[in-house]
Length: 576
Ligand code: ACM
Image (tube, rainbow, N blue to C red; front, top):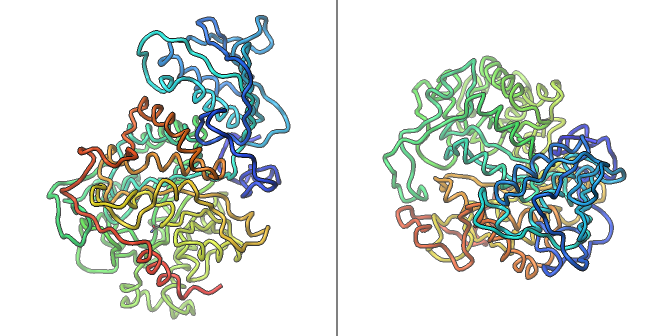
């Protein structure tokens, strides 16, 4: 049993029943129809029976002590919305009926069974995480008003009689939120944790540092946040328009904020993967501590989007600095994975830098790509020695991937395939399919339209496993992540618009395996009422409300052919 939902060393030991080991094998389950259970993500098996279970003020809630956390969450979620006190009843005491969370053997680490009859509701699970997912499904069986935080009037609360057997397809069901380009205030981040949990997602990848902002307090290096956590201004729309807003932007999480966020997420079975992006995407750090960079001239926190040429130097003191940073990161984030970045590192400054060229010569390296692997390897080895798992972007394959690296494959199937064939675990996040900052539809009404169209249907149909892998290689695909990069998402309201409903479709792709889009749409009609009740400002199917448009911030839409061309050019020289 594990209390950690992310695929980590402890979940791995459980062998083939562990969904963390990649795609579930065996025949695809029959699609669940909305007439049976309008839940999202769709349960793997659900069968309706006659009648309903009706809650009353006396309906008790019982839980095995090991599942008390899920029971506490259920009560804390339902009582304010429904007025139902759900009084505690210890297991096995007199007075049958009510809701029970029961520990059961023989189920996987996130699996649950839910049996509702007119007399009782039973959720069975082998782990607290499984019970939590059962409780989440139970909330979806109620009227969408159960998703409010207060009562809207008197009503009878009931759920249909149903038998559900459910387990996720993938162990890693993630969402990246870029809090560096635009800071997401703590309260909004906590709200997102609830939203991820409501969709049975279990990994929050926090992109904490970038050229445009450093968002994590580091005690040893206070200037990282004093200087690095804010910028003078930001582009308004795509950078090609050269418009700027003339308005400072900033914010950061204190270490106590992080402790709170981590524990709030853990209570919802979400593991946070912190990312300290190295050695590129570091201009905010260099602005704070110029000795980390390659240039004599001081830099400011970057006010433009796009990839910065300003990368870290390769001095021993720089490696020591970021080892100190990771030391504090490890204190704060107890999860198994830490991301060290490695993406989009222009080698211009290294190719011109005397110390970098000396390093290459001294170490007998081929080129600056190998120098990058050498640099990053200090941190991946450090993490491995500390019992953690390093995650890094697929560019790290180019200089020979550091041993023990889990690869974040964002540049398409080729990179995911290459990493799996090289024996690395892989989390896939192909940008044309899973980057939710890409526009949702054609038309200039979409707020800051960038990239190609990533439609709701395409996200729903997304299949994380590249074709052509062997069984063993398929097992290395831990799962997938959607990504909310925030260059153009400058507020929590716009984050809602870009995330939903596509994140609900993504959750179905990684939990259930999205197969029947029409059926999903039928369930989405109910789900949107839940999102309304939660106050989520999702994109309406007919397009943005007038107040969701951004005529002040022009975008840079591209066709899928253009995006595919870019991808092909990026990966043309990759050999495997
Ligand atoms: C990335 O999108 N640069 C990981």
